[in-house]
Length: 123
Image 1 (tube, rainbow, N blue to C red):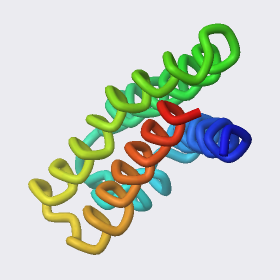
Image 2: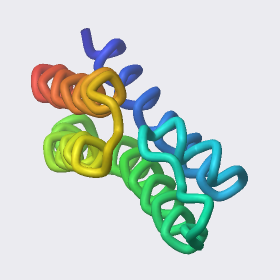
Image 3: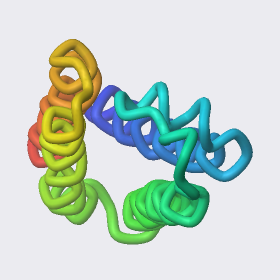
Image 4: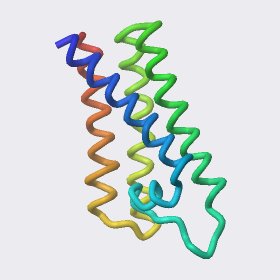
């Protein structure tokens, strides 16, 4: 179970880094995949860049904690960072996104992050 717990945490950390890089490189596409497309009439670029940087930072911190502090510290990190996808779910719902995106992407991610935390606590 320890290998699976570490593996899931690494995959989640690398995935959020990938998503962050995507927001930096192709922000409009990434915003649409998030569930709330960038408005064509506004300059959302700086906000999408902030989101990308936030995501990259979260992933790098998660990898660093796992590498240098271990499973228990990473479990606490995952528990805390689950707030982000729960919040993203609310953002999508509040801004006209679909329920499928809100729950199928963000809520499901939050649950997966909480499962990762539980597995890391058990490791």
